[in-house]
Amino acid sequence: MRFVSGVTGALALVSGLALAAPNLAPRAPTTEEMQSAKSVDDFRDLAMQALESQQADLQRRGEQGTCTLENARVRRDWEHMGKCERKEYIKAVKCLWDLPAVDTEFSAAQNYFDEFVAIHANVTDFVHGTANFFTWHRYLIALWEDTLRDQCGYKGALPYWNWYKYQSALHLSPVFDGSDTSFGSTGEYFPHNGSLVGSRTVHLPPGEGGGCIKDGPFVGYTINIGPIRPAMNGYEPWMKDQRDYNPRCQRRDLVHAASERYTFDGLFDLLAGDHSHTIELMQNKFQEAGTLSQHGAGHYAMGGDGSDVFTSLNDPAFYLHHAMVDKLYWMWQALHPKEANTVAGTLTYMNIIPSRNGTVEDELDVGILGPHLKITDTFNTLGGTPYCYIYE
Image (tube, rainbow, N blue to C red; front, side, top):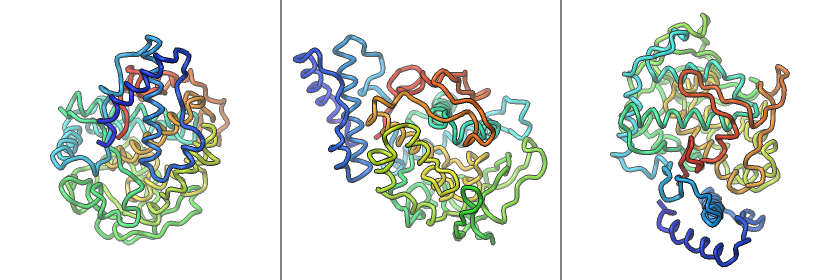
């Protein structure tokens, strides 16, 4: 991990400067520093420098909590994990299929893996294109991570899928290479016409799969909920009540026309460019309606079940995708500390059904998965409660 060796020294240096100058405030990266970034790693390093300065300031003022940069969980790129570490994560995910469902109201849920799919399906229109998009999904994947650790013996942190690698060769990515340490590659060939994106007006060409995944550790595993709003043409929605049991295989269709959406220019725009200055600008661009947005590109790159906005969690790679979503948000918060604890938007998807503006006092509802939390309590990943993590 590229930063670990330097964190202690950097903290000591910043702390020493703080002691020498008691009025020193936490230092945020300058515009010039952000403008000079050339990669996602550069932005991540700038984010860490900002967090080091913030932590040193807390220490100087005697307000340092129990969660520090030294003891925080480190969420890592799947590619940077060893094969044994990947297998341990996969083993823990499989464990969720063996844990019983507890929500009797959602009859399709057969196991605890399904419980995460069910809650997302229940609240989709209230956690996308909304003021709570980033914080609700942050909470969801943190609960997933904790469940793997508490119920299934996993010792590590939630990994992420780095979108900015293998954009034109997803089958070579360790996430999708089809090996026993991946999430499987594309599915069996299934005749279909590609996907309809955004307002179902943007057409993506089909990939070479579309059917049941054919390799990797999740072959033969059954998913039970949905599809509710499949994006892939030729893959029909479950026409009965969405809560009804519908056992089937997991489908996937790797689509490079979607993954190639991930460019450094797009990342730069969100973190240091014209759309980086406020949470409203950043999140609206990130989820841009009617287009293949940065958020949507990962889902459509997976295709199949991963592209159904309601039940995309049926693809276990969902959590790596949303860990990368959260990493981007985490970097943005560190780089823009004055905006870091703000929200913008309403309580309903793109306000199509008019609703009031969201506030930081609004609660995040994750059903039976965990207690309600106020948005204001979920901004800081180093707050200790409920989070204590950083990104590699």
